[in-house]
Image (cartoon, rainbow, N blue to C red; front, top):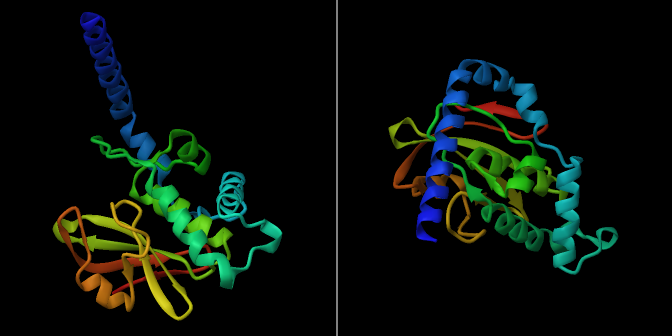
Length: 207
């Protein structure tokens, strides 16, 4: 039994190494094909995507809320919290190859896995589907030049920052955004500056 498991493990390792070689061989082509213009990046946020619509329906069902009776003012924070927990539960993807690619929402849902950028895209689309039109993805520069995306939004005159790539509760980061960022860290790296932010309607670069 142990020998069989060892053999299966070695087979998996060989396959992974083989797939990695194939991906690396076509790395330049994949990267150029996956590049997104600013308009394309904005359009990736979609509340009309079939997968997003299905997840919204399931989340509202878990909350015991019918879509027809959903009230943004009454139900949104509960919806946002449940949505955050869902996206946070996706297994993290940390690729050790330098290939950039985007997963569709359907792919993310099927794999139940995503990198930090795919997570905030999924989250932003779900919040938009829940009526939060001011939700935006903000890309931060952390120590060492590391780029990390988070989601920010306003509700009832309060600011929130959601980071589904961290093991923290939905409402850990709330209050004045600039104060949040002063102490914000990710994987031991401190916040340096904001680079840009966007949603389906707007795009803004920080100087």
